[in-house]
Image 1: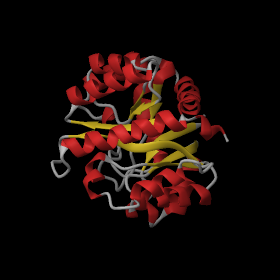
Image 2: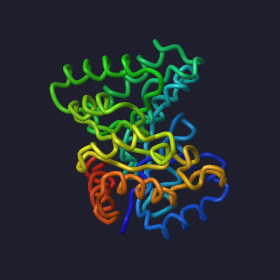
Image 3: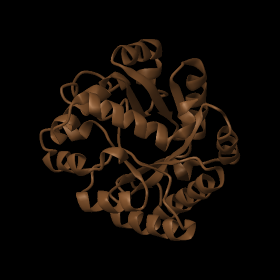
Image 4: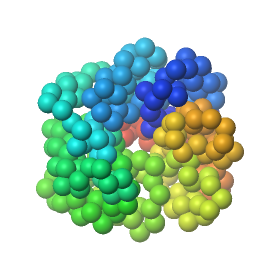
Amino acid sequence: MEWVDTHAHLTDHRLADQLEQVVERAALAGVRRILCVGTTRATSLEAVAIAQRFQGIYAAAGIHPTYAHQEEEGDWQTIESLWDHPRVVAIGETGLDDYWKECPMETQLASIARHWEASHRTGLPLILHMRECTGTMLDMLRQVHRSQGGPLKGVLHSFTESWEVAEEMLSLGLYISFAGMVTYKKSEALRAVAARTPLDRLLVETDSPYLAPEPFRSKGPNEPSRVLATAQCIAQARGIPLADLAAATSTNALRCFPKMRG
């Protein structure tokens, strides 16, 4: 079986300091592709450097909503220059976050609008973050869908919302990705959402070094090899063989991120 970890922050020092071992453990677990996601100018550049260094690792470049207020002159132009790179397969991580209050929502909305325009212009999919802002995010996505006149390209990563929210996201064209939280004892409702999500629109991720799945929650930083634990939980919730989930999510990843086929 082969897996794709569609969201990992390999630039975090907890992983970057042991990157060769992290990549080796991922390969031993059957993780053949990893999407290393940037959140700032610096980490986007680092993500591209990591993708150039390791076969099977790809990069995304963008500005995370909680860092949008820290953007400095020239940051956006640098990130724009990365999207033509052959190892850059997505724009982001962008989105909205009303949990951390440092970045004003107006600044976040302006930032995500710029990312959406870039996605529409370049054809690259977006990686979307959403926390404590469901209504605002849905309103914005509906507006983008109307203005673009067609399905949205991208994924809502680390999904934790209700089936009703998932259903609307799917209707807009987005993929939905599940991380380690789906494995937690209290996450029965989230497992039910993962069980109902159409198999051709479902992705798996680690969000490394965060959100370690059971049984790894107290065993150091999360890493791409542990995507298997999340996948096992989802396969069990769906009542399907693990190999079927591996085949479907890997196919979906290449469909969502076409440049990853190269």
